[in-house]
Length: 148
Image (tube, rainbow, N blue to C red; front, side):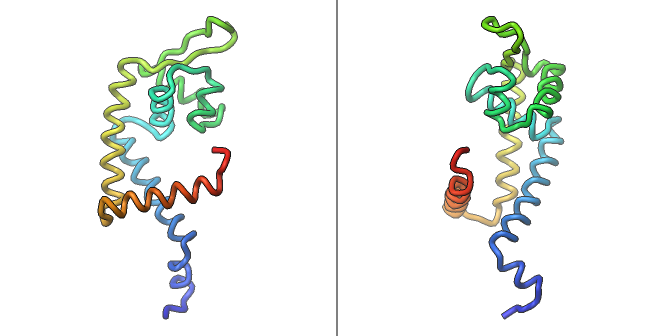
């Protein structure tokens, strides 16, 4: 039995999750960068595609992006024509953000890139093991974030 500190650490699920999360984050960051995007871009476009147009506040909740980062992300995507920002007809003080046709096309490219990243990350696992891992991680996350 390995009694060194590194051996002990390597046996801890929390350490393994953290190390794998760091690796996954690096892969996603690098992969999205190759596609001219950042993680916030993907999260925002995906939230708009899944749930439709939204106010900035609603979009922040849907995408789990803090308002201070959300505005900059919306600006970046709007400058590229991937989202539009229009005054809300019901409340002119508020903006409604909508994904554009170009934004949908970009999101499809990002989806393909994310799928490749997932395949790279999970390469040593079979399809059944990938489903099992995803199920277990989802269960852990639901347990620790019941309101999410």
